[in-house]
Length: 313
Ligand code: A3D
Image 1 (tube, rainbow, N blue to C red):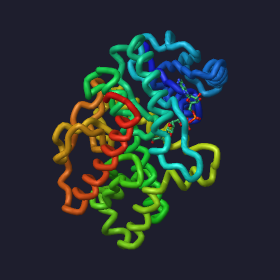
Image 2 (image 1 turned 90 degrees about the horizontal axis):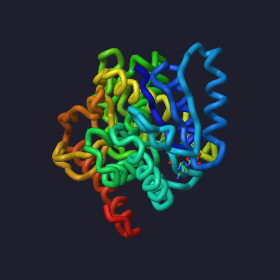
Image 3 (image 1 turned 45 degrees about the vertical axis):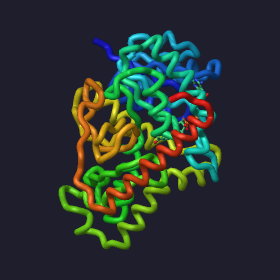
């Protein structure tokens, strides 16, 4: 049986995620974008790389959501990305409107799909998608933590001159400056990084991870990161479609875990065929718990802004 992933938004992140999903032979891909011809053109280009790349994935593009029918997973990347000097929250007003339109269309054609949100501000658009879709919490969640931990892992590997994939790490919290990288839960081939790097170096890496997105925006000027975000999307999609049950940091609706409820926040979650199958609760120090609470408050204040803008969510 063929599986299908729809990607809404055929921009930098969406198109690169389509490429990774097809080339990793994970699923057929349907790309949708509101800009006429964009998704069709990119899908056609991607299809023409198939003979050389050696996969037989079907890749379609359209302005119409009809091609999303029967999707197992829908990845939402539609929206505006940051420019230099902007925070992710600055995107709220415009991206909330886009996400609302997208969700209405997706629910109509793919009511059984799992929704993976990517549009920023991530934890807030995921909350909006959850409310508007009416889907259960296990089928609406957001990608951010896998990217944030990938950045953390890459910087640790560079500092130690070691293979990046041997570095495991954990980052909790909202996708923004209040994220909470956890050096205590970060290891290289099982060795805690606190035994390999001195405190000052770890502190600098934590800070660079927090600013990881902005550092790239500053260089690119006209947009934000997309290669690593697309890798993170593909990893989460793989865990779902192959029912791998990987434990990946995911923005999920908390229902009392970590002493928090009614807020989407990055926490370790088991991702499998049913979506979010379990949330893992880590033991946190007083400082870590406080930082996570601060992060939750930040996400809540952005949701409150959404309400002030007239959204009944
Ligand atoms: P970009 O290259 O501009 O692509 C966005 C695409 O969305 C464009 O092709 C638009 O035409 C399309 N679009 C806009 N409105 C609609 C609509 N109503 N329906 C369908 N398509 C529409 O941006 P990008 O791909 O670089 O980034 C996309 C989003 O992902 C932004 O909001 C980024 O901030 C966000 N992002 C999040 C992460 C996380 O880790 C959470 C990482 C990278 C990017």
